Length: 261
Image 1 (cartoon, rainbow, N blue to C red):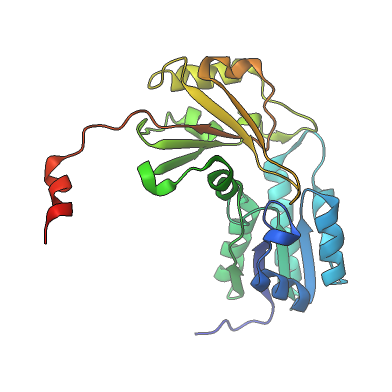
Image 2: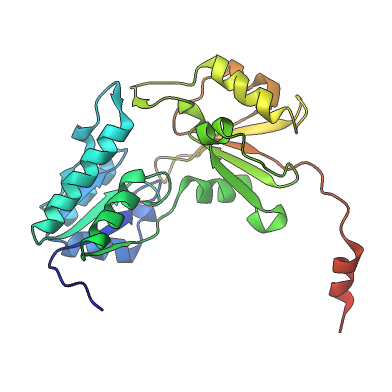
C-alpha cells in the first residue's frame, strides 16, 4: 500500500569525489525535491548542489568542535523529519554512500516509515569501493570483512585472517566527539595493533588508505609494517586495509566440483 501521508524523503550519496560519482538518479532527486539538505566535505560539491536546487541547505552547522556526534546525528534526524512532516518532498545528500557509517540516514528513514511516510535510500560510491579500484583488491578472491574500528576492538570481533580486513574510522578510535584536526591517539593504535597481533605477525604489511577528494587527485596510500602503525598520524578519513594471510589448503571434495560434467 502507498504511504497515506504527504511528504517524502530520499537519501542520496554524492560519492567520494562529488559530481563525477553522483548517480544520475540521485541528481534527478536533488533537482526535483521541494527541499534539499546536504552534508559534504568539499566546497565544489556544495556549490554544485546549490546550483541544482535553490532550496539547498547545509547541515554542517549542526556540528561543533568537541560536540558529541550522537547529539548531532539526533539533530539531523529532527531537522529532516520536521521538513517531511510539513509535507515537503525532501532530498538529503551525504558524502560517499549515504548508508555507510551515516547513522542519521538510517535513523531518519526508520522514524518516517513508522509514521507512514515514504522514505528511501539510493546507493552511492563509498570509500571501500574506491579502495578496491585503487589498490586492485577483488572482494571475490578471498572475501572482505569490514568493521568500524572502535566496535571491532570493543567487542573483540571474530575475523578470519585469511580473508581481507577493512577497518573504518581508525582515526577516531574511542572518540565520541567531533574534534577539528584530530588524529588517533598512539596508545589507542597500540591497543589495536596488539589485538591484530593475535593473528598477524608484526611485520605484516598494512595500508592506510585515503580516497581522493577530487577526480584529478590520486589517493593517499601509506604502506607500513603493522607494528609501526602507532608511529604515524591517522586521521578520521583513513581506511585501514589488512591483506589476507596465505590461504588454507582447499577442500579436495570442493575442488573436484570443477571437474564434474
